[in-house]
Length: 183
Ligand code: AMP
Image (cartoon, rainbow, N blue to C red; front, side):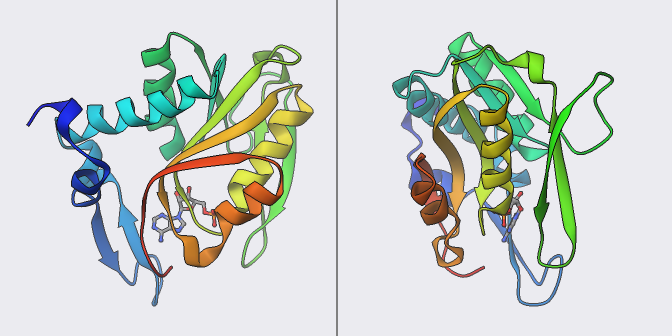
């Protein structure tokens, strides 16, 4: 099989599902088996890149940590820069940040505001959208840095959790490669 010939359904078959991780009731959709596959990885990157290119990406933003794997590869594929949206305390310069609610407690994302020019078309890339909390927070942060952010691309959507619908309600168009039922 060549990379170009793997369909999203073929790629879905390369995702490993681990039940009850990290806690009972969660079906963990593990991309380790997808990115460890010599044809699956480039096919995934090519499909994500097509969508990001169609959205006019001038820069790709990805969320730590799995968004770095896909986002940086898409950026390199398109010949545009990559913006890491980081967990707190990792960047060595003055950052801007956003706090967001988790099921228990809060979390925070940070970025270097100088990594985006005002009005630059940024496309957000991540591995999976579940509740959408992380992606909504990242979108707020990127917009506050001046990004023209209208598009987000994910490998996996868990539609039962409603994250993609929330992003669409926030004015983003959302592309995904595959869906899994449940949480
Ligand atoms: P959320 O903020 O709820 O949309 O979840 C964001 C992140 O949590 C995703 O980018 C995934 O990395 C991770 N995640 C959430 N649910 C799952 C799941 N069922 N399987 C694998 N990763 C998950």
